[in-house]
Image: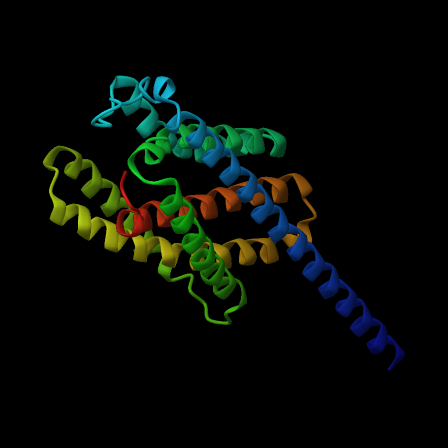
Length: 245
């Protein structure tokens, strides 16, 4: 009986350690993501409110991108693929530095919104996005429902959005733009819940390993996933709720 009680106590202690570790892991994910968001909007604001800086990337009147603007527009996508390929060769500190560099480049690509939309509407959409994101992420973290099956459908949806968006750059169809915005908002809302649950489950599956370096990089990858979900939800909502200058 005493032996059983010892085993039970040890199991309870181990479970408590895992719960504490999970909370610390999720705090690091959200903290890293938040710093990335601050970097993105700081860079976007600094460039978007400076006609001289913005003109380096876009026409100050039409906001059409020049060659450098096109490079900046697609650079974040290239960096995401590069990050995924290089993550195993990077240290946790290197992965974090890469993420912050990515967030800064994303700020350059989004700078035009401070010229196209009023500052008040950008702040309002950011608040709406933050509340929506928090609710979806909390649901993904707390739900007992396994939503891992959503992954393949959501990723296929993202690929379809990217293809449709690139095509519509040349077509300029309002109908395609509206459809992409609606579907994009729904897809990234789903990804917010899915990615949160996936980050939680990934930690629980590897918590016993005690590999702090791997867990550190996993937190950065999780922050990147949620960051992308937030940015895309924000941009799609801005198309619907933002007031243009």
